[in-house]
Length: 131
Image (cartoon, rainbow, N blue to C red):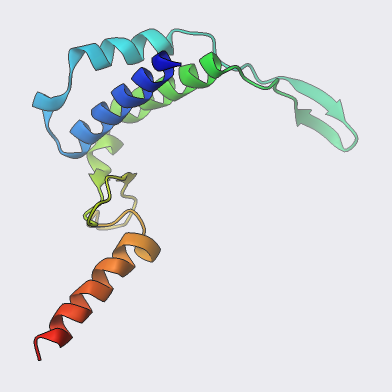
């Protein structure tokens, strides 16, 4: 089970380093681990004829196959220009990394409903407590 945690943590460190635009925090051992898992067997989609036409009938993936897919997705994301739009949430006690797809690229929180709303409520409280 620790291998799975190791892969998850390696992807997280690479994603957060990219979000911070910190090449110094990108670790070679994390890159090697993600690459090794990306070479594994991935789930293979299959077609079958269903009642209303063709449907996907992919077998339930093994944990190893899921991690292979995660590693490949991480490589796809981290090696594209879109990786410059990775940001870490500005919310207090939130480490969520998100892909900022807003037009101006200035999103600050993982979710407006969650951290963004909390920040706005706190700012409002601070403004009105000073009066």
